[in-house]
Image (tube, rainbow, N blue to C red; front, side):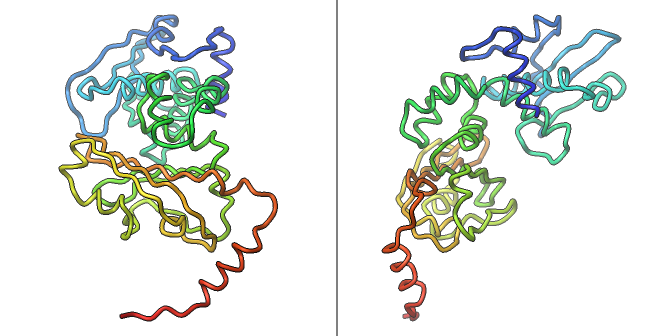
Length: 285
């Protein structure tokens, strides 16, 4: 509903192309926007109120334009979404932690509003469909939308027709995982839970164990069985692409298959092969 509220706002304002400018939207409502260079752990921005006047302060010490624009859009979510101003602003100030990092419903709604505002479905789909699914496509769309790779990857997984999984991890531990509808169609899959280790026998896990490479923004790629990541009973090859996010110390992983969830008819040969594999004993050396 929050994403839809953002898209409805864009339609009313006649904004139909990418990128969407949150600075201009704030200015259109006489909201003053300023960067705050002081570093406060986890804080992305603030919404200020003095009488009927509003202001937005965002974390300027994080140099990513995509992060800053998302933070401003998050505060606009609090401003535009019904009930938010009265609920979240205490003594004239609300401190936000944007980026899908909290379970607070008001913060999550503001995050979803920001995603819908900066990456509205119609133009976002039009652009993503021009590219083969994967990390390169996410980075290309992120450049167009002027959004972070992280926020773009989450929106990409939400709208993709292909089977896509987006995993964020820190020091080898999963922060969160978003799956496309096609990927969710896998029977008996194992959901990747926050706080659990990355699957050990994966290129991403080996990459995450090398902090210098993560800090340097290096990338790794592999072709693996989907069961190595998501378990279940379906054998299918997927692409695994990961990139280090530099100073954040995080790794963004994108799993993609163009076949999972796309076949209406069952593959009898694949099912038989899978049955044989599952019933064939494996002996430790």
